[in-house]
Length: 611
Image (tube, rainbow, N blue to C red; front, top):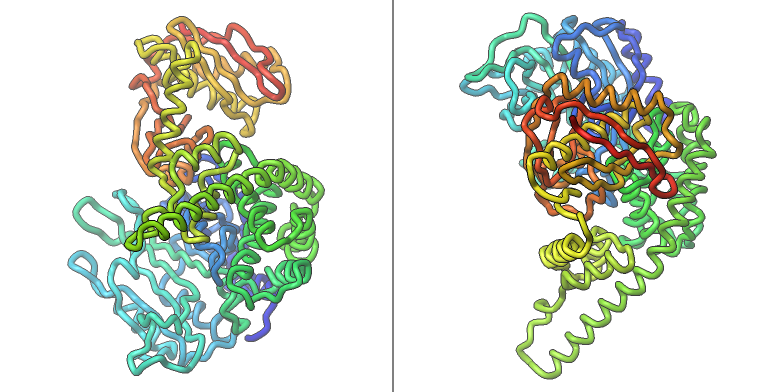
């Protein structure tokens, strides 16, 4: 099938599996609810994990949907032909119902009968087996019986064709069957196959067969076997239309076309411009999806709001780079909503004015920062090249690469004085062949923090005025208070500051109203409930980006080092923090809120004690 629209692809997928007895369960929020341990929904099967692990699904054993996902760990790859931060996964599942025979037949049927692929060109990979699990000859035989050439079926190892939850036992796992198709019939060599680096073959989807239980020392067969299918929506749309660039599909082309007309340039002719156009299109799409989500967020300096702010600000910078007026970014939102996603995501229509307003506010806010910051950045760069020219004249053996670096102090000044994010300094420097002394930036930042701590009364590590037993207890209590406020006030509540002594805690948080007596009581009761539950407190060190992706609460993530400590209190709280903490909430005693008052505009303050 060629020249298929995104609307047609949605309908074909869902109608096909509905005809096979599947229920379309729709999609869930893009924003993590805390139960999955990640900030965003990052995979089509993620919301179904409890049911793949054995919990009965209320809508039955055969399910299908098209699920939106957000993944930002490879944000630096966005700008090429295929990477997207927001993407959709076409999925279908069997929860202890049908298995390999039906699934291989149905995938083959939809690919050949509905999408028009040549069965002689389809290639598959299956699990090669190892010391613990046998070779998946069953799937290979079923594929061959369907009409796939034997020489087009490849046996690969665990790293390619096996799915399991790392670090767990007692969970389902098993081999998977991946489907490939050539983009062209022209081979780069006689050995050109799915393993070739020429990218002639594209992976179009996979079927995971969860038929084993993972043990400490191996695997054993499961009684109830599951099927988990995942096909990338954008990738399939690109492939079926004979394209190699996802931004040329109807999911993006109206946006790309509008941008190229605005700047008077042709998409694809200039690599730098083309990359910027892709980044703008991708980041605006992801941003409006997050703001317009059923659990929508807004740009902020913490949590998911920080990731959203980073996406929008990156889009703004690339708009300036290609001379696209930033006021046009709101127009891109309306094109996405009205022309591309109105039917698939009706909630975007309902929240259209709100989405546009939030994006316009962020554009206005950042414009004030970025104009001055870019000028200062250019001054720093000019200084570097003046030095290089001087050194070249005075020393014929001089190596200019030694000085092609923005010092940590310069990077910190851009950040601290002009509000220029370190990520932006690094990215802009890379584009012109310069490096940034990131370690020097961290050192300058730490020196600044130390100075602030020693010159501001009571401003010690993590807001503590000391490190004794009571300060440690109060510090742990602030984490419980922060978590409780999210339940009572709402997820938009975030810590804005704290001050802790051995006698009390003071906690500032974002809130647009004076708390009612009932809200104060509910907050106090919830904290005491968690104290009574005697929850264990654990600490894990991890890379900063992994901590953010895991959903750990934080303030001003750009100020943290690459390796951070994440403190988890039962299933109640997860925060990036420098400590210290007690080992169990049962050590805290009774929590009592003594006062709730205004701190500043949009910020409230709670003073509380432990008895």
